Amino acid sequence: MSALSAVLFDIDDTLFGTTEFAGRARKNAVRAMCEAGLDLPIEDVERELAEVIAEFSSNYSRHFDKLLVRLGQPLRDDASAAIVVAAGVSAYHDTKFREIAPFPDVIPLLSDLKAAGLRTGIVTHGWTDKQAEKLVRIGVVPHLDAEAIFISDEIGISKPNPKLYETALARMGLEAHEVMYVGDSPAHDIAPPKSLGMVTAWASRASKWTPSGESEEADHTIADFEELRAILREQYGVPF
Image (cartoon, rainbow, N blue to C red; front, side):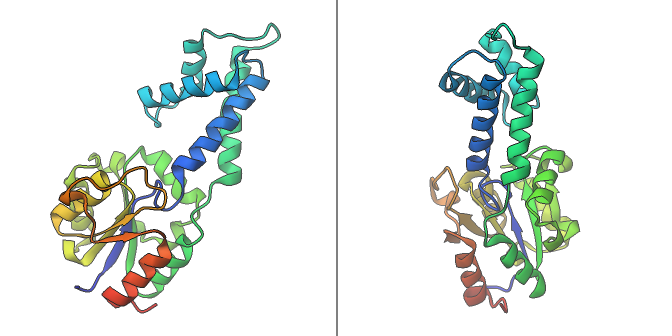
């Protein structure tokens, strides 16, 4: 194996359990909306919210307003639609402030990679403000190369377009074989960088997918970042 100059990471379900966290936050939001006067069983509201998110995407900014409209605003007599929506938004953000955190092995690895002289960065899909906020909230920014953070919205290229990864390589001034990319989606995080000749590692612990076909088979499969640490040390000579 060739020596590495950089390790780049996806964010969602790679550095922290986005899917699990979002599920908890949405449950708390629905509960708060019902307590504030939404007069429907919690299970029915959760099911409709899941449809709203599936149809309008997780990046849509007015899920709870859309939810209330779709439900026909079934409110108790003493309730206000604005207050019900605000209760949901507040509960969601309260969960974010209280519970969002990286997997426990993330910051130790990033810190040690930086100390070992490797560049560490991000290639992620999503809106710039949302993805940047996640990096700040999970506390990884001090351990990243500020010039190696690539967000699809900011770059103007979305996953799984390989051009997003090509842009990252070009801006970092590195060859594909010098860079490892770590992500949870075989289609978005493995196949595109692999097609360019980058080293790939599939982070399986929070992934919702499994590889489908040879193009999505990563060079390495890791259950956690301790396994990644061992691979980097034993196969790429990273001096941990």
